[in-house]
Length: 182
Image (spheres, rainbow, N blue to C red):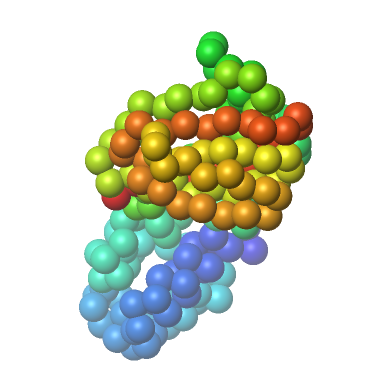
């Protein structure tokens, strides 16, 4: 079985199951023979664009959802290898671990900070919530006037749509920051 047929087979089965449709019902809605759909889900046959388009419409998914290669199920970014941006005002660097995919509204960062200057952050878009988990060292973080000191393993969440700050209280401070946008 060729790779595109494998992708189509897996995608059709996944989307049909997600929609809660039987082979017969999907074939009927798409206007194709049940045997054709069965062959496609088995990874055989030679689907036309028209057949796949009809199946996409019947499943209420874009054509691309049936033909694009699957996304990797595991993504690893080794420590120190992700795209990193440093602050101009503090010994602070942010490494983006995962940008928000379509339909989701969150970004994940791994941050490194050293004692010294406080990293002040302007408000983000309205409704932003930040989730912070300390990995090493100690950090004081949160909205201005409400900052809290945290140790390794501590978690906090707070509004990110107000002025807030991060301050390393120990050398080698690292933490994970998830920015959730509404």
